[in-house]
Length: 302
Length: 202
Image (tube, rainbow over the protein chains, first blue to last red):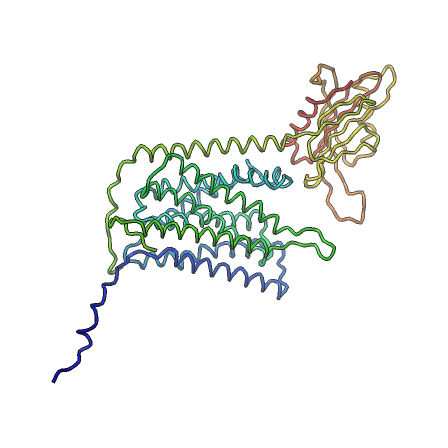
């Protein structure tokens, strides 16, 4: 009597690809999601519970909030990296160097030499965008480019997605320094508004940093062009300039008959949409480039 | 960690010519961008608006965006509405004088008058001064405490530093005044220099 053996009819199960690296977009999505939800929760709690901190409490609470993005990065990305079979090296040193450079050079240069609020606050919209792009934006993007160039490029860029991993880490360090300076040098703010500002800063820094990192990646894996890196530097700077000028207009409420006041949630919504759109764009570009890639030596997987 | 794959980093390949040039162009672009940014800053900060009062014989350029006032006992006064605390001020006043008056005697008169009207008025120095058009003048530097005139508004006094340039022309004294909050004196002093460079006393 014949017996039925299903295993003989089933096709052999395909060998699962071994992907020994941390999946960067996944951990970034976790971090960003938790950050956005946390900022909204803090803002809502501040409104519902009518929390008003005094001038001594504000810097401390704001500084704690400012450290949250870095803590989440350590929890999701860095821990994920440590757990991966093939971790990316040099991420933590890149963050440390970025924090030192941002706090010692870039942020003081922006605050004391450029001092944008003394001459751009009353300028027209286009001039504000151009001014922020050519000063503040360029200062941050050029600093991040130099750090990526020294710490990671080209030897640590083994796959396309490595550009994203190192860029997000460096940009997060810059955002953390900016947020800590806001807390400790400018006195911080009430928790609700401070949380929104902190997450906005992280999103825009990370989004703008991706532009240069993407071009650095193309410079290594793609067809390098002479001016593409310089253009990407200006494009990343433009993103910061545009975001800074446009968000200020959304956040500062206009005078009205009914009520006049700031609208931080509107500015926050813009920052979230801005950051997510840029993330999605570069995820798409890298995925497309990976899909086109036929070289077995450069397996780019998300 | 167990199971971790450890690979040595691949040997560093020399950069191609395009890669090297791409980096160099990026750095040059950044420097050029900064230069344009600071040029834009200089244009915005140094922008001026013309002032013309032919009856008083005063032509000048005052900072763009400052509030102009011609209703007081002066030819004009321009104040910076965006200045935190005390609003930085540029002012030109004409004072009729007797035939024997000198710029030094006018400065002494200003000092005596202000000592009674301004809180904590203190003269820091008086010296001869030459206007950009070559006219001789006297430069008076002083400081005082600016207090809120409404006693019901809670505020702390602000230390104001001022510079007066006093010169005599057509039988009247011309007093050019620059006042700024003490902390910003060094940073803002160029505004007086810019103003003097554009001032024409007809």
